[in-house]
Length: 272
Image (tube, rainbow, N blue to C red; front, top):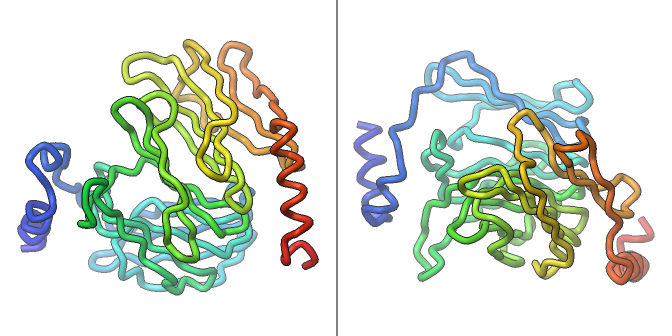
């Protein structure tokens, strides 16, 4: 009955081409555990599948802070470096990456907001095939990335209000990885060719405009776990070059580094 109900709901929302992309969800094995770390490795969200309801838990530096039943559909989680923001996908077709939105939780595992995805052509709700979700280190923004026709589709959200900050088609059609910096000031996007291993990297500013980009041929390898890094000192970022087997360091453009420093000085939070 559960499967029939889901099929009815999906057919209500979607056209035949969209429905053709879906596949029946595989059953989760009871007892299986999926774990997700913050970028700095300090916080961990774990989801345990049960016979009926799953449960989830939250750890800080390996110490469990809480464990609760998970009433929302389980899926790929993300957690900010300060542990203040956790995201989970809302109901969808998880084995295919389809979801109806993003649930935002606080550090205590309490639901703060449900951000529902909307159709680009109307205000109707719609599934989106999200490849990756990342949260800014301070937990104030989250970013999602999807494969697109001409370029990958990238959307930045305000985690507090749930509003879209910007949406953009970026780089090549297939998404590899995304990251968002503190306060949503910068976003890094790694994409690759739909048929091939050439890659394009982009740095986007706070409005979603591309302020730096670079293409590298024959660079895609699924053995590479991370293609993108923001530097800890805030001076720039790094991208992985497969040929040299190392990260290439790039500084932020000077005018944006100056603007970033100026905004921090004027921010009421800068004195905290």
